[in-house]
Image 1 (tube, helix red, strand yellow):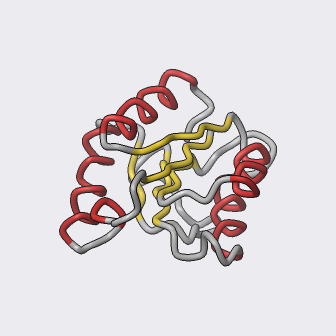
Image 2: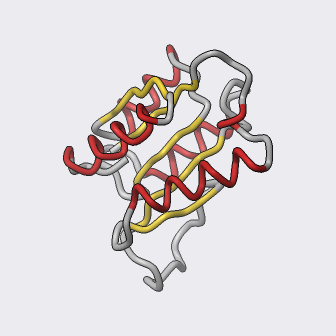
Image 3: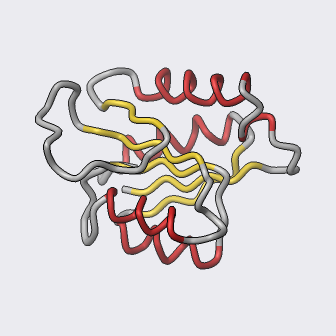
Length: 131
């Protein structure tokens, strides 16, 4: 999710507390490699990653049949920053400058209400946190 191990671990612990089996990646290439062997129900990724960008990771996930419809949460550095660069196909965007866990909780709660991944009937939800 973020190149910072501290933030990545915070998100991992939160997702595990919500019943997710979590895989983490330190960079975008590692995350894409994990998509070869792990089909997540949720992907949380920073937009700025080493090796390849979060936007490229999201594009790759959207082009794979197994992950095309997966909920993807992009983590952006700041709200209000110039966003004239390439747009991501993320389902949701949250911001580092605000409580990440609370924002992610709100996203997951909204999915539960709409019958999304949190209410999924599969036995264990899987998440990939890249960064």
